[in-house]
Picture 1 (tube, one colour):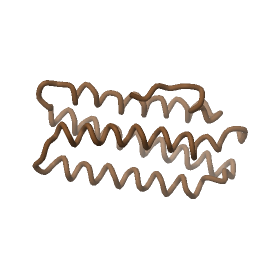
Picture 2 (cartoon, helix red, strand yellow):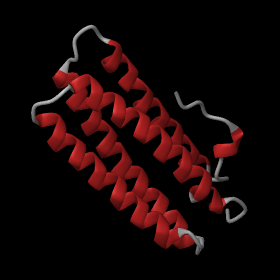
Picture 3 (cartoon, helix red, strand yellow):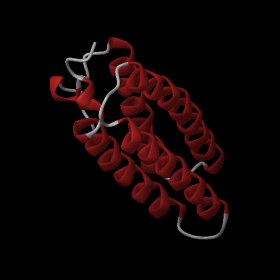
Picture 4 (cartoon, one colour):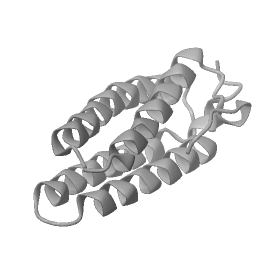
Length: 130
């Protein structure tokens, strides 16, 4: 599970609050995964919520990086696109047959690693640019 610490801070309170919200949404997958039976509708709603929130956050973050001329703005935008493409692949896979529990577990683990690495390696380049 992802836990917010100061190492994730970008120096931009709005972005940090949005990152915390992403941590929370990804953490909510645990409730769906740990249920005795996977609630497919709840899982789909949660992934759609994550996708919608990520889009809003990514737009905000990309504007911030452009405004501050952050050196990571190009790679940041590419990483965001890949994230959204990955969610689309997951949604297609999840809509098909297969082990829903396993798919959700893989998604949550992947999202946690992606978000941790993305913030620490790319987003924190914003520190000191505010």
